[in-house]
Image (cartoon, rainbow, N blue to C red):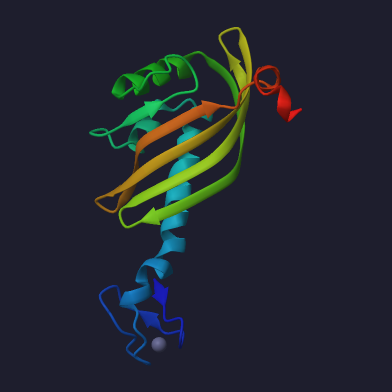
Length: 173
Ligand SMILES: [Zn+2]
């Protein structure tokens, strides 16, 4: 539900103008709806990461646009993956022992039926006998498909190790 920014009355989905005061709603509908859409997109992103924590490959699959999905991962293989990436992730979840994460600096921009989300994630855990503690930058592209936001593309890339940066960019230190 959206409200007229001028007089506060409720606005019907189909109305171009406020029925009470005549305010031109059509022109700013995108901005009015955007907090609602941003919340919807945020919820998909949180569910996607929770899917890892809960080791629930099926829940993750439901958030993905299966026909168009692509991914660059921050684990090998680093090449672009499609549904094979989902399969690989599902296999990894079976041997994932611990997983905790924090998301920061989340930004969501909505362009009609497309959304762009970016954030930083720190995640720690244990897979097989390997402990990991990773900080990555993530970008996700989502599309609204029959009124539901689905992940079309995701790109995870690790922050380089401090030593790597120090060796290559000594002038920064
Ligand atoms: Zn009004």
